[in-house]
Amino acid sequence: MKLAPSILAADFARLGEQVAEAERAGADRIHVDVMDGHFVPNISMGPVIVQSLRPVTRLPLETHLMISDPDAYLEAFVEAGSDALLVHWEGNNNLHRTVQRVKALGKRVGVVINPATPAAALEEILPDVDQVLVMTVNPGFGHQHFLETTLPKIRRVREMVDRIKPGCDVEVDGGIDTTTAPLAASAGANVLVAGSSVFGDRDGVTAAMNRLRAAVEKVVN
Ligand code: DX5
Ligand code: ZN
Image (tube, rainbow, N blue to C red; front, side):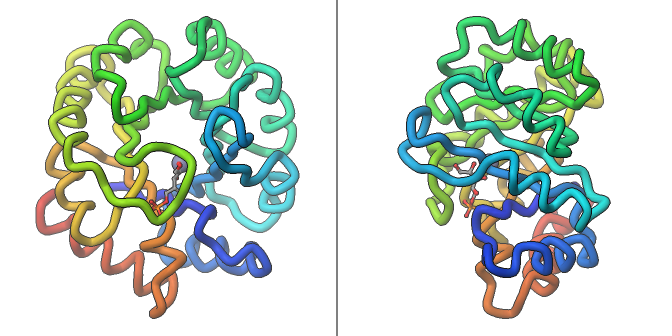
């Protein structure tokens, strides 16, 4: 099980420190949520944040693009230091082309599906991607409740990945905490994105990550 702390919930005044702490606590990658106020009703961060974090951590920086025109920004994020670009299925009329562009830039690529998008939307693009991300909340904000209706979909995505693209990560994003992480893990997720449950825990990042790991170990092992 891999953990991808989402810096959306971090203290931006201490971002470098918080990412370093997540790295020391065994994070596998850092999840960067990019929002444009158009694709989702919220504005967050851009390539400059990735650029600032690049010298601070050796962890892969995966960039979740919740923006209307991802193609226009792929190069900028790669130049800033992103290692993986996650692009949404929704609203992209030429998803295959976007995916090929990311691959041509030499980076890992993932496709993201929103709660109302069926697992089957991933089938034809699956051979071309390194990871899929199943949104377990509606994208746009942290601190939302995990939608349990996504669990059967996670199972369907896992089944499809094992059949078509073994080795492709099945990642979940939104409302992941010690209660919901085991549910997502037993449905077949192998990467957990977690924002507020990691950076919002009053006992700190390390304690929060240890608790998340302990919660999933019970179901994974
Ligand atoms: C939601 C973002 C998530 C968010 C998760 O639009 O894609 O990555 O940061 O935050 P929590 O873990 O607080 O739900
Ligand atoms: Zn995200």
